[in-house]
Image 1 (tube, rainbow, N blue to C red):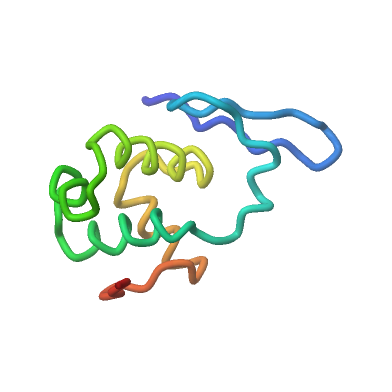
Image 2 (image 1 turned 45 degrees about the vertical axis):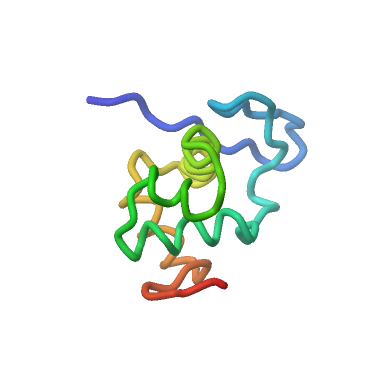
Length: 101
């Protein structure tokens, strides 16, 4: 079995979580939306683009795309891109077939 995701701290605990690309997030639950960059990346992945293609389409490095995805997976406790997409759709933060210009 794989490692379980790190639980999100309860308000008032003051705990911060580190994420895989450096830095920390404070009380991740207070971020109910995606940034424009995260939205574009997720929309492209839903459309079937690879992470490498997403990076090229938006003038980003593959590492930047990877870090956006790693942070989102950590924030929502997802172990895969598929789990992340499913969770974001359930929360209404992402819609299949979404196009962001």
